[in-house]
Picture 1: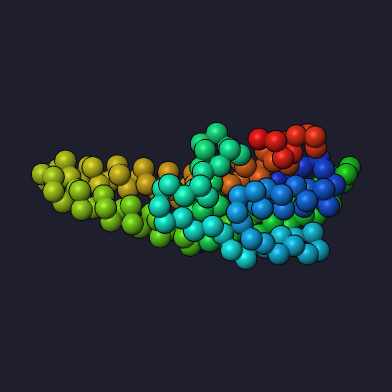
Picture 2: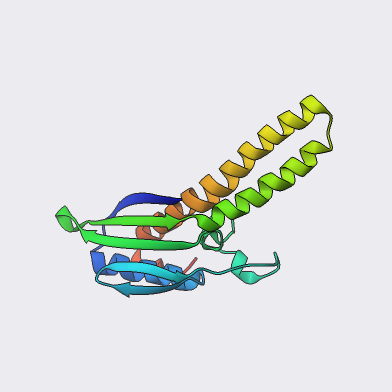
Length: 160
């Protein structure tokens, strides 16, 4: 259920931690920070697609990926040469719930189709849901957003 990513940034550990705290606050994630680690205590929950929490200007998709995950833990460890090793652990229980709902709706649609077409539709739809929700929103997009936020020059860190 959890996915762990490791990144290396050229910022000191404390500066990297402050940047990620700013990102999480901006995206509506409540967290607890201590000893160069951040643990989310609550991620935003969206019920309707008109809620502003669902959208973000921090990535190219325009979607807040933290809405789809149950939690995020980030650890910062100083490394050689002033670099910082950043370990991101994404808790994806909520992502699997979204995927299960999507796959169930695909099954209902596939049952209304003739036999071979319905089976092919269901297989393709399941693969698309798994890639789109679990792999992309529940993993890659969070890793990319955190990595990009750590690469931003300090003068533009909050200006997206």
